[in-house]
Structure formats: C-alpha cells, structure tokens
Amino acid sequence: MSDELIRIYTGDWYFNAGIVGFLRTICNNNFEKLSEFDNQDLYIGDNFLDFNPNILKYFKENFYKQLFLNYFNKTQYLAYINKALTHKNKDNSLNISKSKKEVDKFPFQGLWKTLDQSLESKNDFLEFYAKIESITKEQIYELIKNKDKASLEKLLGYLTNGIIGLSKIGQYINDSVDKKYKIKSKKNRFCISCQERKGKFDVSNAISNIIGFNSDNSNWIWGFDANKVKFCSVCSLIYISASVGLVFSKKGKNYNNCFYFVNHNGNINLLLKSYIQFRYQLEDIKSSFSIYPVMVKESVKFTKSTKAEKTLHNISFVEVKESGMGGQSTKGYNVYSFSMPEKLANFIDKNNQLIPKGYYKIDKSFFDIEENILKSTIEQTLGYKDIDKYIRIYISNTDGGRKFSPYKIIKYILRYINFIHGGNSMDMEKISKKGFANGKEIGNLFRSSERENQINSLVYQFLNDLKVANREKFLDKYLRVTISNGLESRFGNVEMNNKDAFLQFGYSFINGLLNTYQNEKGENNE
Image (cartoon, rainbow, N blue to C red; front, top):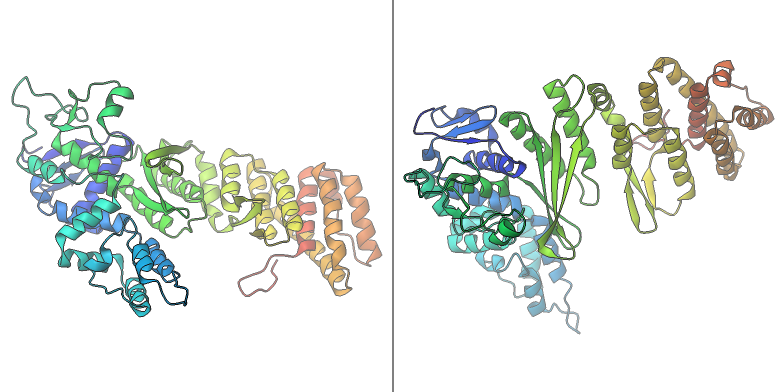
C-alpha cells in the first residue's frame, strides 16, 4: 500500500455503517461513480478500504448534501404547512400568526424565510405548499445552499439534532488530509478504534449520539476514562459518516427518528449492495407496515448471492428507535438476525409473489399479515393451525378491521406445508384445486338460491372437524351438503386414507365456499 493512502478496516456494525456513509459521500450518492476512481485514489478491498486523502476535497460539501437528503422529511414539512391552513379566527379567516408558528416548527425553523416565501395570506400558504410539493429534496437543497450557507448549516443542525454534531467535521477532514494522525512520540495515545493512528478527538455526541458516544457513557457503560481514550481524525470521520450510511425514516404521528442498518460478514461491496437494496425497499413501505418482510427478503438475497450451502452466515439488521417516553436522547435497540437453510431461502425466493399481504385489527392492536406469515416461515412453524386462525378472523371480523385474501393465505401455507413435508406437491396441488372447485361450486349454488347466510355457519362446522382432523365427521357433513344439493362427491379414497390429503382438500374446500379471491379487475379467480 502506498504511503499516500489511508487504510481502514471493517469493524463493528456502526463503523461498517460509517464506511457505507463515507462511500456514499465520496460519490455524492451516485454509487456507480465509485468504479470510476483510480486505485491510487480509492480501492475497495474485501474487508478494507484504501483512499487518498486528496479525495476529501469536496467531502464536507457532499456530506452536507447527503445529510439533508437523509434527514429532511418533505412529507413532514408539507404536513405542517397543511395544518397551518387549519388555524382560523372567529370570522373563519386564517390566523396568520398561529399559521406561521406551525410552519416554523422544529426542525424547520426559518426555512420559509430562507426560501423567500411570503406568508401573509391564505394564498401565500397555499402557494408555498404547492411549491414544496412540486420540487424534489435535491432542488430544495440547492435553493437553500445557493441562498445562504449559514442558514443551511443552521437547518442541518436542527435536522441532525440528537443524531450528530457538525462543529468538528472540518477538523476531522483537515487532520486527515494533513496526516496529523501520525504517531510521533511515545506520549501519543493510540486511537481506541483502529489502534494505529493518534487518538486526538473526544468520545462525544459530536461523532454520534445514535449509539451514545459521550464521556459519561465511556466511563459508566464502557468502563474507561474518557480523558485517556480518544479517536483519531480518520475514525472520527468514518463514525460521523455513519449518519448517512444508516437507512433513516420517521415513524408515527410524532415523527420519531428510526435508523436501520444491514450488517454482515460479506465483503464491503456486498455490504454496500445490501444497503442500497434495503434503503430503496424501505422507501416504498408505508409507515404503518412492518419492515420485517424486507429484512427477510434481503436475507434471502444474501443467502443466494453468497451461495451458502447450509446456513445464512452472520447477517443482521440493526434497528435504533427513539423512545416515545424519552425523546431523542433515549433510544431503543433491536437486532434481527437470520439463519436459514439455503433450501428455505430458495423456497421464499421462488414464492415471493405468493407471500400474502394485508392486515387485521383486534381492538387497538394492528397485525401485519406478511410479517406474521414470514416469521412463521422462518421459524418453520407455519401449519394448518394458521389457516384455521386466519379463516376464523376473516369470517368473524366484518366491520372493516381486516384486509386480506384467505385464498392467498391458504394457497401459500399449503404450498409451504408440501415443501416442508417433502411429499408429492403435484398430487397435493391437484387435490387442493379439486377441493377449491368443489367448494366454489357449492358456494355459488348457495348464493344463487339466496342461502348465502348459511355459508359462514357451514365454514365454522367444517373448521371444527378439520382442526382435530376428524375425517368421519367432516365427510358426514360434506356428503349431506353435496347430496342434498344434487352434486357429485369429490372426496375420494386418497383424502380418506391420507391425513395431509384430507386437510389439503378440506381447507381448499372451505376456501372455495368463501370464494373471496379476486383479481385486480375484481373478477373471481381460482
């Protein structure tokens, strides 16, 4: 390695997030440009990164832009402007004073002034809303930067309050460029992180408040004297870069900060790829839905890309959330780790489009169907009991507290059961199709003869028999229904003599009775 280059190695999850954030900043969020760097300026190894300090020339400017793109929440700002329009006087005119305060709420103080927006009438507020809605975050950033750099730094301070401090980033960059990190005497202490360069900068919230870097924690939690332990300029720069290497979102009505990172023992390029995929997938998720399915699908991709023979090696998802009780200074941490056989990963990947989505509510509790189904898939506990549960929820919850397709749930679970048992899935699929068609035929007959109100009662009776796998009672009810309606029985010897065949037929038969599955055009499908 050339003496001109600085080398950093992968480390703890937060340092790895810093490496990702550093690379995002260097390429200004255009990751394809990383391949355009000469190896003498930037080289990405498996577990290390070499870079020439000369590439830090525009680092601060790029970093500010990535901070803004990461932490400026346009949806939140538009919500504040929209709410400002609700503040009325007694004569129903807009209360300008209260409306201005609404738009000026933290962390957007003074932004409307920086953008040269007049807010003296209702039309001004409407005009401002339309303006912000019509332009991208990048365009908003350029407007602020070109107008007033001091205002930009102040706004970034608000946006990153409780996350990082920006006062020393210039020192981190300059000391790295000037190589002031070199050990020159025995009195110099080594950096606590790399153990190679000179420790100079305090363990402080300026580097990161996300994981509690401060002098109090260094003594109380980590057990060392903060006066004796320092970071070098390079490691400080990497750690502060983690603020743009984390996937960030705001959750809930209070817009609490949430941070996510994908960490694994793959090489840096794979780490970067996981970050990019995970970030763009999270951007498409509604705030009310779980991110667990995205974690599972990213784990599946990692398994397939590393061609793991038996297990998924060391991939985890770190989630950091602000506490609703303690505010920005109080954070909760969750780590989701996945280990699955490659065979199971292949099943999830192959059936990705079949994984059911939707939700149901019980009292004030919200349940995400996709999350629950995938958790049971990963834990390999998914079974007939889950079909029973979801059907009962579906037919009992008719007041708008659920939105899901029993058809899709039953189809996925039955396919999963066939996969786990390793039986002849083709035969089982034929039995399932036969059961569904038979149930649909009877259900349609009941509807056409104005007996639809009897269907749910029948479903409950059949469910009770299936729950305990009582073939005799099920068959007795089934024959009475088919014969009394002049229909042919499709329940055969295979279903009578094989438990799985019986259950596959029975639950598919119920699914046909309900006949709830519809395509995008609203047409019934099998």
